[in-house]
Image: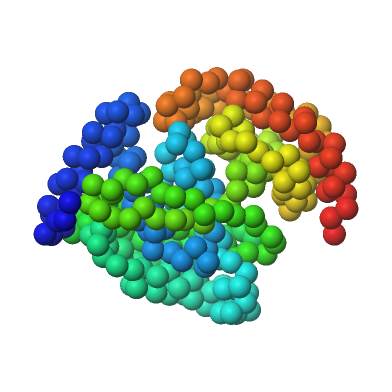
Amino acid sequence: MIFSDSHEFLAVLEQTLREQAERNGRSQDYTNLKEELAIERFLARIDPEVAIVKGGTAAMLTLSNTPHTKDVDLVITDTVVQSLGLDKMNPAQRADALAELVQDHLRKAPKSDFFRFKLETAFPITDLKPGHACARVNISVMVGKSEIHFLQVDIALQDTEIPSKLLPGRDLLGFAEVSNPQIRTVTPEYLVADKVTLYLEEHGTADADRVKDIVHAALIIQSCSLEKVHLTKLLADRAVHREVVDKLRLPVPAPPDRWNDRFDELIEQANTNMTMREAMNIIKEKINEIRNEAVTLAAKFP
């Protein structure tokens, strides 16, 4: 179906998303789908050789049922970091250079889907460890004159090996004859290792809020065929990176009861029936299979 203008396209798009939301039966799914589509169209414009997607967006692309995500976490590949000298810049220069890199990709992309992207702000994030986000770029996502989403993009520089794979988008614009994008994301094994070590890192702190990490890790373990050796290596690597090897030696601790309501809300968004206790049991069973090997391997890391 070819559209003469953005107004006509938007009308059909909104109807299509409403029908999809009704089929999904998810809480606030129409709004969620619009925001997730905005993210996907942004990523469709980013060269998969330039950046790797991680975090909640990677989980969204890996699984058909995940909680809603509003933001994007990108890692700029080492080749691009070196070619542009991003690791040699001061924080403000790096944030500006990353914003320009993103804008270059947004400018060059075809406009066949009627989506427009306007850079609003870009600023450095400092005092974080290597591999953490070093800049944040905020972008307004528009179709015609309608704002679809205000998108926050956190950008890190690759500092270690990050296993990744190309995944297809969800083909939400097939009705408009827009090709389904291929997006580079971290592997499911990386996601599980990352989510579990994030949980361990913050567990016990007063302001810990890693409920979504529990949901993501449990759903990925339940739904994906994970390669054991790959997962073990990544769990060791992430544990060393986050300095939680001592915590990894022990059984995975239980989350506080106050997380239950938030967990139930997120699992409903994922259109799944699961309690937090069941999710933790799924995670504990998988980690118990590889804990000793991961701890031994972590001791060999520099």
